[in-house]
Image (cartoon, rainbow, N blue to C red; front, top):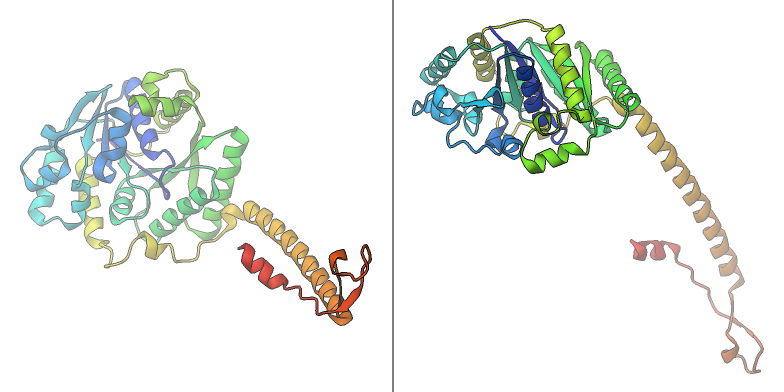
Length: 356
């Protein structure tokens, strides 16, 4: 029996893989047996963060050429890692024999206290199935309006199904506790207003200059910088999970449920994130940001309206007079001006077009 936790996000680039990896290390450092399953297609992010380049992945387990024990990376700083690679993509189209072979492989695993899945960003069939089959989900977002909106979109799609895990939110890359609280409050209010989903806060991760250094070094920041702000934050999140552990489920039961959901939820051809994103999304998540932008836009429009009105008035006056001052060189008397009758053309629209 293990606590199965899926880490997901509506938007890429929010630090989901980094949180999955470093949270796994924090739980292992606290004395728990942890298995991290990299369900992000291609294993690219785990490669970058750890310097691991496995030769085999889940695809070989599915076709029977390798066992799960053969592809697993054992005892990486105290945790075991299952490389998903392209095999994750094949999960939606398994035959009965392949599904049975995969589940049998998981039955042979050692017992773990925590089984953590790092999913791809977005709302693919694999991501939705992993989230729905687990009893707990960590939703990662940043204070950026686009990240909060995409996090809401993921929950909106998940809410359409019957299975819904416990959702706990981590706000990453925050500059202050106040900014994190404001971002979480926006997300929570919108979710509670429009969806029958309940979310709760799990923690925050401070913006930390040591995190990019760890990425370049290909060493998790939890290991490389044990006392940096990001590490202190991840330890606090791990402690909160330990104190409020949630429900244990057999790993094989998780995979049975996951594969059933995948079989039911195969996307239609051409469907995906792009199709789903066409649905209207309530903008209450970014209401304050939108209001500020609208106020700025209204001010610009007012200024432009006044400018256009003044230009039109000047153009009208000059057109009615039909006169234009001539330079001294055109005057018959040196140093004097004379007035000639000549239309004065002021094409403001053409000037604007030429500047674009």
